[in-house]
Image (cartoon, rainbow, N blue to C red; front, side, top):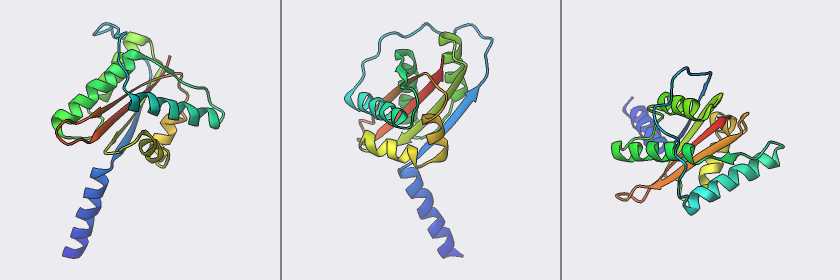
Length: 167
């Protein structure tokens, strides 16, 4: 029994160290915007490369390329900062991010992928495409997206938040 518990603990640690998750929300929100539209966002090379890889993949399977939206990328960055500050990888407050994107941008559908500890955009995309939930978001009926790839200064590990929206 102890051997099984050790194996299960090892599996949990491996998953936590190279993890990613997906989430989706559909519907409309009858809320007024809780914050102004963010129009300025400075993209780093990892973010630009990840967006290009996602669009290249979408085009390769006959889907439309997604248009980047600075406001969505800003919401992604906020979530990465939260995950780093709290040493977690999760979708906490996804409903609030989705509601914000719905109210500020008029989104009809919002989905989110997060990932942690992938050194390159190619590795993060490969992991997302190997996961049914993530792949569903990447191949989803979306028109726009945003992304943030943030490196934790303390650990050097990268946090990825990628939000998709149908506007």
